[in-house]
Image (cartoon, helix red, strand yellow):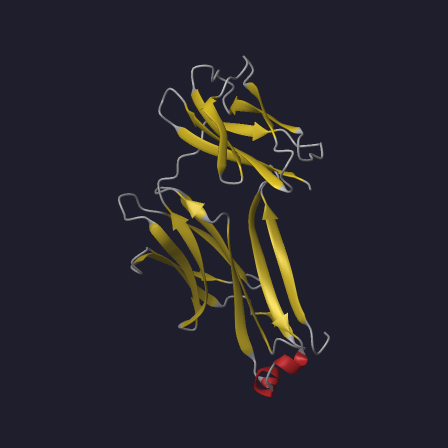
Length: 250
């Protein structure tokens, strides 16, 4: 470890589908940044991992805690097997909702789960880990009535380089996650050059949801920024907004 450097180790967790669920950083400074007292003292450290960072009421929080001990420089090892650990779930008002007492395995880790109660005020909940009656680490989670969108709008990549006087073309497609038709959805758009509105109205889409918008740029101006904002409302009232910007070079 270099004495004047800052180090960060990241652990990425992905589920079976390849979706990134969490990224856990562990940061350490070089030797000269750590006091002599920390070098010699045997102290506990802990990391807490959750399967995701946001939950609906009634969902299950899966957690895993890893405990170690050492001086953080030369001697770092897992705590002994059978070390008692307490893990607790707290609500947004810092009220303890549930707790469980576990014992570490030979790798110094524990694992378990909590079910988030329904009918509580949402907000920032937390999972806390203690050992020997002392707080070791905690992790915040967001609890709310999350509703996943049923459709999305995808803009095509801009492959051209535009200059003043060119006509900027923005294309994309409106898609439903379930595959159902969105032909009855109402979509509107606003085209701007910086803060000046150039055009607005109903967005016309083809049967497969594709659309295309074109707007001329000012040949007398230098660097410009053409942006489009699209608002979509389907039959159920679900509303989503999307935007894309394109720079015009001088």
